[in-house]
Amino acid sequence: MKTATRPLPFLAVFILLLLSVSASAQETTATITGQVTDAASAVVAGAEITLTNLSTRDERKTMSNDEGYYSLTFITPGIYNLSAKLQGFKEYLNQSVELMVNDRKTINIQLEAGAIDEQVTVTAEIPLVQSSPTVGDVIENRKVVEMPLNNRSFLQLVTLVPGVTTDETAEAGIGLTNLTTILIGGNRRNSTNYLVDGVANVDVGSNITLLDSDR
Image 1: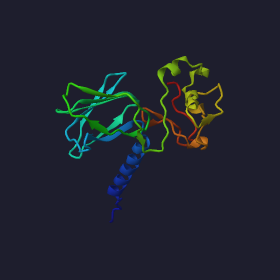
Image 2: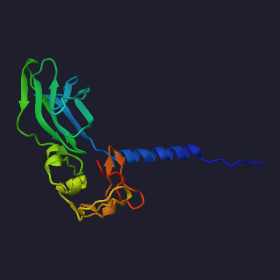
Image 3: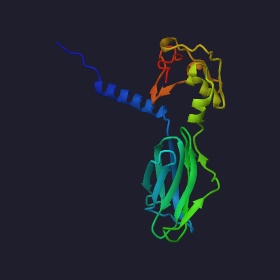
């Protein structure tokens, strides 16, 4: 008697690949990369890079590698100060760097020779390279609280982003009756995905029904 077997290893790999693609498609954070050099454009290794959130005072730290490059990933959108320190150089400080959803920014750092307790502050806006064509936006808390939204539906806030239109009515439903008609960049309404804490929040059948609408 023969027993049928299934290619489970292949199935497991296939599922893992699907999960990987899904996770990358739900990116809601930002990334900063760059290279640290000195006044002579020589690479500077071992510089301590610190990213400080101005609202929460949380810090992220990393070091420039042997080629002077650094990278900070999975950054929550917000406004930050970026600093770099290394013995023999003045401290570098780039103030009020604004990071939006899915930003990919390159900020190169040039250190000046001097004492570490001296500081070079960047006050003018430095041209930042945005390597991703994705457009993102963050609706600040003040707008969420003060804007006169019908039924306090958060979906109406999406229309503040350029390229977004809707014929959303004031009588938005709840649960499986909560249909949405947000159109982004001319796409159809069922081409829009909604995430709550990184998890898809739409019915997979119609792709126009929100499962959780009272956040």
